[in-house]
Amino acid sequence: MKEPTDGVTLSGSVREKLIASKEKWAREGRLLTGETSTPQADRLPPGQRLVTDFPVLDLGVQPEVKLDRWRLRIEGLVEERQALDWEAFNALPQHEWKNDIHCVTAWSRYDNIWHGVSARDLLMLARPKPEARFVVFHSYDGYTTNVPLEVFAAEEVLVAHSWNNVPLERVHGGPARIVIPRYYFWKSAKWVTRIELRAEDQPGFWEVRGYHNNADPWLEERYA
Ligand SMILES: Nc1nc2c(c(=O)[nH]1)N[C@H]1C(S)=C(S)[C@@H](COP(=O)(O)O)O[C@H]1N2
Ligand SMILES: [Mo]
Image (cartoon, rainbow, N blue to C red; front, side, top):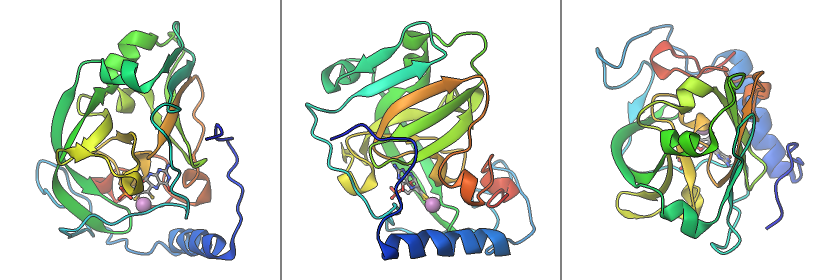
């Protein structure tokens, strides 16, 4: 598998149509209820509906990454760059969290059990420089998404390799994906390979196409 580049090449009319329709939703503010809430007051954020299946959302590419080629790099404004292979990644302390998924397309799924390595442990290894304030995730399909460093460093954030006690399926981002449960699920990069620490924010794939930069589901931060 080649390392992804930052720019995703838009090829294939199906894919372009899919992206164009999401951009249109963003422009028109589709699905917005105008209500806000808090996770303490409501388990289901405004405008969401509960599902029991596990929908798959991607850019029309589901990269197949062989475990012996897989790498997790932590780069940018860090003291100790990391390039973990599968064995080194799995040798790190393992954590389990159960949480809810909220997708901007209005489905939510309760009680997902994730196993993986915590963002905090990865940051302890890489040691962010004092000027590091933002994180960009880079994935094997060319996808990117961005969060403030403190969002990545929150307690429940994982690089997860298992979902509901089985290895994470390729369609859901296996070998490993980011899980940031507090925000809309587009911030949880599938097939992650590089975690870049930066001084300045850098909007990702959907963030430059009309999605909100913060993505808090209780504030309905769907679109910019
Ligand atoms: N690498 C990558 N990560 C991604 C995406 C993607 O297209 N590529 N889609 C995002 C979006 S929009 C959502 S809603 C979730 C979907 O995750 P799922 O397919 O496991 O439900 O993954 C996010 N992470
Ligand atoms: Mo999404």
